[in-house]
Length: 76
Image (tube, rainbow, N blue to C red; front, side, top):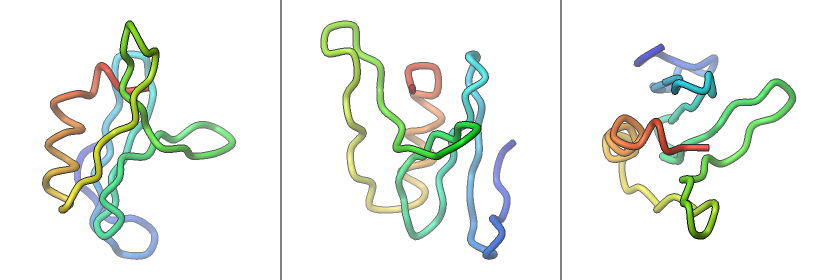
């Protein structure tokens, strides 16, 4: 886990939370993706009132990685 390169050579960051869910950010796409066994989906922030909230749009790879690190345990 951590910073690496994907199969196309793009910079990416991958992290796992305590629920064993895997999340990643790819440079250029700048969105947080949740990886599941059969498909990938956009990550969502868990909220006790609304259940799930969409994540904001990130202007850069660094902003997306910072948000992922700060909110890793609340992501679903």
